Image (tube, rainbow, N blue to C red; front, side, top):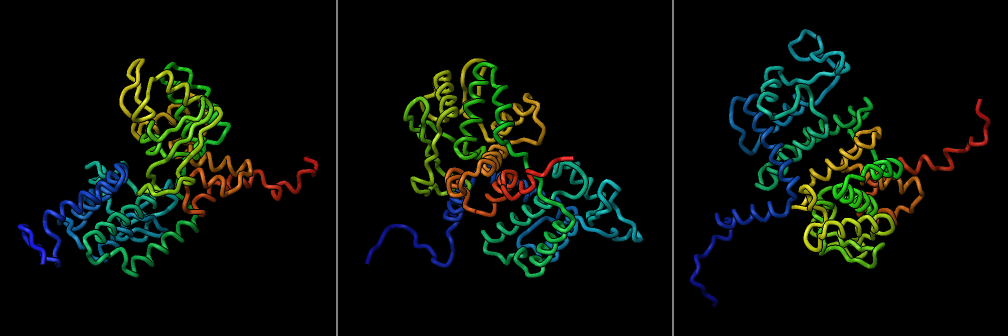
Length: 369
């Protein structure tokens, strides 16, 4: 029998020190953006609960609380309770109402828990619901979000929003033509050299996410020649453990994108660590953040004067949409993007492909009046 001079643990209970290690491992396995979004959602839950129930939020949460949260935050047709059949919402809301009392709404805005009064986007409500569910799951508590009544209400809410034609807001796809316009603004010294390389790197390698661009390292980059690089993607949203095969993980960077990357590396002198850096006057500094990548896209779009709501995700949706327009085979395009969900990929691909569809041009020979 083996013995050791270490205190024996109870196999039925996780030791206090192990609990701290468990929490640290969970935290380490999440991206910074995800952790921030989780923390923000839980802060909102706590503030709303305190105002609604005059008590501190504790887990597990009862099912009626989740149902109340949904009717407080999700818009519907009808009249607000206690208004004698009069909708609380104004004409700008299309007559839609929700149950969150005005004083609580105002208090949440004043406390910085929401940006403006009124019902949030459905995606925001569902994200907060998912975070509450995750909190119960990690603590192995009875999960109110999994209650059949809650699940049925969420299903009906989604259907109601779809029936009213309410779709999640999406960033404008940065396809080839607007991308060219953004690149034309990259003439402002070292910052312009960096931004041109960053935009082309992100777009041409399959529409990299902003976290992937900010986290790209020289150690992941193999230079074949001045116009050809291979970039090995580490962990990503669709492959958080970084276990992708060689074919999945390696993204080619060729032609104009490779030339722009060569120009940036030559001008900046970057040889190790993060590929893309902040610019301090005329020299490169520390690594960019995901937020900085977003700001670069927004700034270049504003300078180019292109119409649309552009952001970092515009690079990814733009690549997929352009692939559809140019009839790139699905498997080839998805090999670069790394999409695991065909449904998600097709939302963008088909919006591009439909414009080049032969079926959409059956009347092409018909004279125009």
